[in-house]
Length: 219
Image (cartoon, helix red, strand yellow):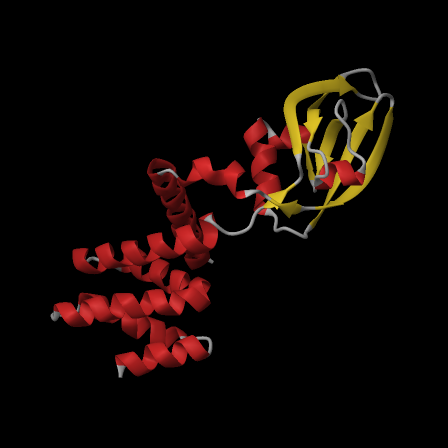
């Protein structure tokens, strides 16, 4: 029955009940059944990772069995790394630093100043140049994005092919551009694949998902 469930789920989106049954088997008294259930959840997660992760988070939040907790953690860690951490990320092709420029009233306005623009990258193709000041990216002003990591995370949270609006200042003139993002090259994100950073990424992801679950349950 369990084998049929996994095979059927790979052919079409699995039902919540099917995934829940497999999660329940992670605590089965027989080791072979526990192993098989974990393998089947991972197999389903290859095609339907969001469904499996959603149910694993719910089970993890209400679980008191250490065996189930351990196996849920292994399933979620594998799927998060493969389908979330390593998912294609947006790429603008800019090097930047926090800076300021003068606003309309002469007061300093936080910006990100471009120190370099990657040749042939999305930013250069759209007309961005070194020395430009980014006032706003997407719906967020530079002051809302804070440090360099804030802007980098915003860009990388988008998918390749997504369009991102920017408001920039060049000299005394401001202009709005819409840029189609490329894909972040693997070598630029490779440092995030260290064991320490992967573990931290997963812990941050899990904390966020558990937090969202608690918030939803209050409403």
